[in-house]
Image (cartoon, rainbow, N blue to C red; front, side):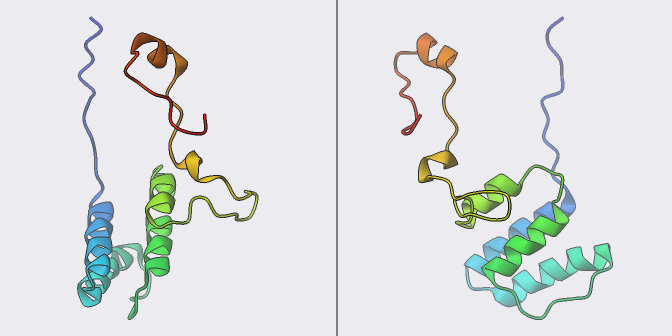
Length: 117
């Protein structure tokens, strides 16, 4: 059978706390965001924080979610993806989207390639 029943998603509790912290931070509820970040930091044995900015939130996600393949989405969401950093030159804006594979374009004439590809 080709029907493999493996189509489920797993979210880590730490990621859930950080998602809520980011949402609260963006809504101006910094105290609530700090509480959630400190829950994650306590589990990791890190010292609590008393202030939090968007740059700090991105850093917290980077430390907690290392090796979990969320960094690209995080960098796009925080407006940092196209910037240059060590070992990476600045990239054009269109790189935020992936190209649509040619096989899919040929199968569906209603699809249009993402700009830049």
